[in-house]
Amino acid sequence: MEYVCPVCNGMATYLLRCPHCGKQMEDRGMVADFLDEYSPYLAMDITQLVDGASYDQCVHLFYCEACKHDKRISIQRIRM
Image (tube, rainbow, N blue to C red; front, side, top):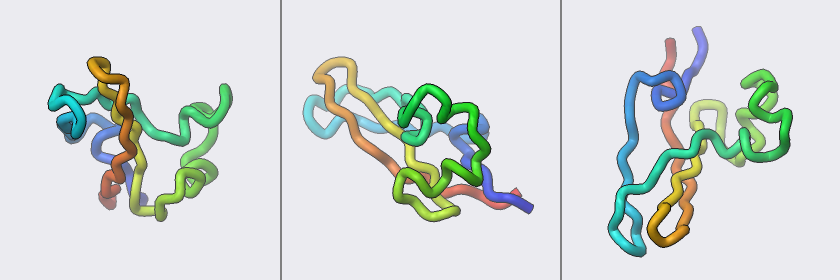
């Protein structure tokens, strides 16, 4: 069994309103994918602890197009 992020794997969506302007924020994906140009291609066991989360958390970057605010949200991984 392994832990997977339900948002990354399309099993759930996470809706978030911007705390500054109230508009819907966009999920830009895992924070670890933004570290460098090769990060999205690395194995999950390498990148899952880079963003400061534990093995059962997946940290996503949410971005507001309206006011350019961003926020990191920890998503609970589920066991499959």
